[in-house]
Image 1 (cartoon, rainbow, N blue to C red):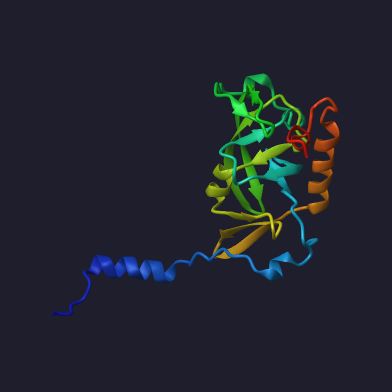
Image 2: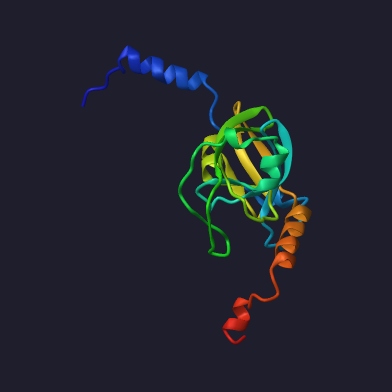
Length: 194
């Protein structure tokens, strides 16, 4: 077995990696639960800067494949129908109902000093949330979310940054969704004889 030096090109790559900032590992611990009401089963609802405005009641849903924007936010951001791009796929709501999108719009999302652009599907339907942030946003930011810890963590500039959830707002949203449900709809429990 012979031992030799790496070629100069490999040495340069290793040197650049050593000088560059290491990406911090993303993790959650019991310390991240401080300031949250435990135990809970609350959704992760945050405030984000979307299109230059601070937007409340934004649901972070890593189970969703697309970012969704509802009418109140679309109008509040002063967007016009001409700002929409065509989007012709149907979306399925939480209740299993299909919704025809009005179109798609690309907007910047700012978290602290970090900015990513996201394509929102604009849906004319009721929601207690103003928007839903999904995997494309999380992946573009390099983020990981935790409903248990009520946080989104992402690496930036060699350190870890956080977006903190608002449990009170999450609970208001669920109460709003439940109170809006028509009384004529049978509950799943009633349908199952429970």
